[in-house]
Length: 126
Image (cartoon, rainbow, N blue to C red; front, side):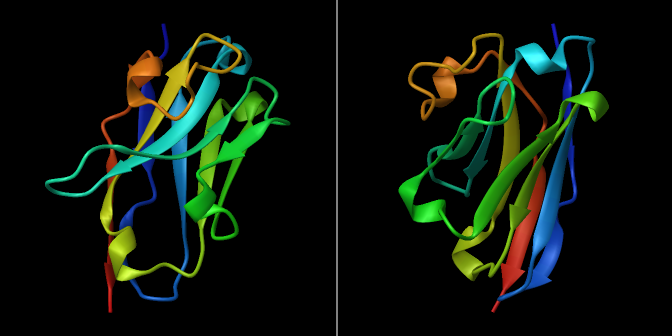
């Protein structure tokens, strides 16, 4: 079992950047696929990016390529989401998720992930 804690959210102006962190408990962090999702008020949880065990395999929602980057440090049990050129429409609660598979199927579905953090709020002002 793994517990996830996100941090790094906040208020930023449009065009700015944020790096979110997701710290995981447990000794076998390297054996979990990780994902980032977000959810705006009144909307469904939206897939952003997924990372397989080693972090070498990453999969982005087409609309996020170029602005969002996932990375993971298995030694620190942490996965990161670097977000650049933020827009007001990026305002949402951001969640990290973990699954014991090499990569959930489908990795774009929130229901495919076993563990979730509590979320961190990102607000982008115009």
